Length: 108
Image (cartoon, rainbow, N blue to C red; front, side, top):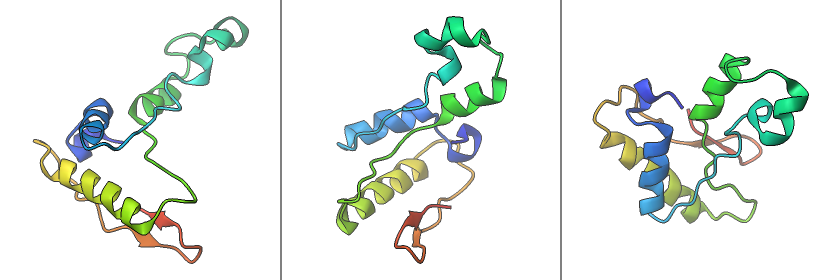
């Protein structure tokens, strides 16, 4: 996510969602090349993959399940929209999620 457009950092969004009982995960932080196992093997080190590190620092995984109901999805998306609308510096409004032909929702 882009803090400059959303109005909050990833960590602020995670904290706000947690306060609403919505669990998130940061699956890609730290990126693989900075995880303990790979530090000696990859030999890339910090700032070696600057774009990867930037994307990792801004990513958040929202709840996702094939068993997620429409109500649960709406609750989550409405919470994200509400949190963003209350953010002090947001410049981009999240559009209403639309289901594609497979029934998957995409937020743009």
